[in-house]
Length: 309
Image (cartoon, rainbow, N blue to C red):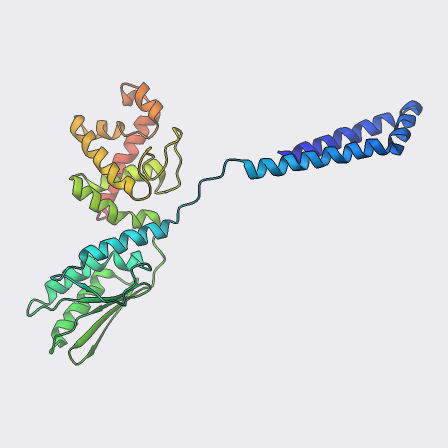
């Protein structure tokens, strides 16, 4: 804006000088002006003042909200989840396992690995020990003296369930067996990473996780730094809760709305992110924006459900 104003003034001064230079009287005024040291000092002071104002405006302008480190939020969530899994009957954490560098793509598969271990190794089951969860998942199954059939079954099932994006290996030395998994695919986006916290929140409140996922998608498109038209922020454009907390708050709001409304569509309409339109329109079906939004949420809810959420 300031650059535009500076160029505008330069244009005006240049046009004025050209206009004055077309007459003898104007040329006389220009000669006087060129020789006036006070005038040049005033012009210089004017540019200095404008520059200082521009600098002050730049530094005093309201700071932009700091972008949330999305991966860090999911890493912390995954670390908390892993620590909840680590109780004596299920799994132990090795002292070398760093919980500040957890890779979500690996941490999220840990519950499945423990389930596979239970289902494939049914006799004399030992408690797995987790020693790494950064760029590799390392799970120790120490204590099995004969592990050929068990290990083969376990390895086959893990590879089948995880798919080609995960590199899986099992090494055995006497009674010590180590399952190592490396993720070789592209890093998950926020939509994929939201799947597990959404499932946890929805299970806790007894609501459909597919519907909660669809609400997030059509509210913020899974952006933590989203700002709504009513100065609301976050994944679900609420005026409370930050980061992943809004998923759990959203699950509570969805549960309440489903109880208060006759149909799922009415419940979704009551959660329309623009408060002004939500409160002024009695029948959401008569408002094209709300009606389209509800239809999109319901449609994507079916999509998420059909794709395994």
